[in-house]
Image (tube, rainbow, N blue to C red; front, side, top):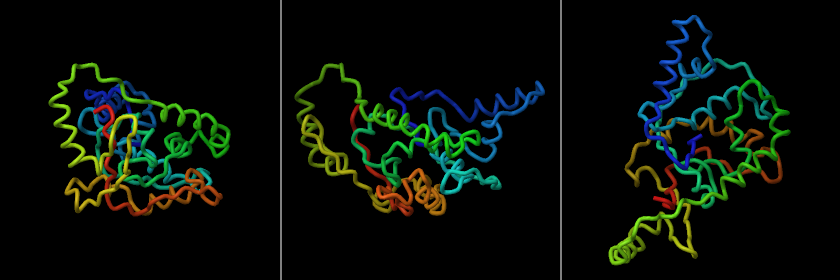
Length: 238
């Protein structure tokens, strides 16, 4: 997933670490791990401190049917779309997951990243309550308090500018906060489209039809299979 971390590690280089570890294992005659082999098809994040984690879920979902039974499928190659990991505390405001908001927020969506072959369908039914607790925990997180002295004159000037120019997309703050959850089309944003195009409509439909999205149940989640842009994030903790 677009993994979230309260303290983002800007020095961590997962791709380089995996490649160098694999080379060391080869020299020592040791067997490669799943991560070593998976990195051949799944880019792990090239610039230091970024993540390509959302593609892990798509790759793992590719090898499952709608009830999460394991399928034998040929490996697929995925497009690299490195991103900074957003902080966990965005969860308490956002009703959907991921930068394009294609998946409704829910505990089952968090389980997508445990779809390793050892975990069969029974694992997910057995551990649903655990992931309900995980979702409740991450939803409870808030950003740390800002401890640096604030120039109130500059702050009041900045607040009026923010309310006038930024709040319609990023929301308002304080005790009576609001968050619009606004998805802005890419042609309006004018930003890099690779994150949107890297996840195919076929892959999004597979997720939408799966147990992870409550397919076939009365409380089925609404999953977008053709999001047209990126959701403006809240700015808590910035």
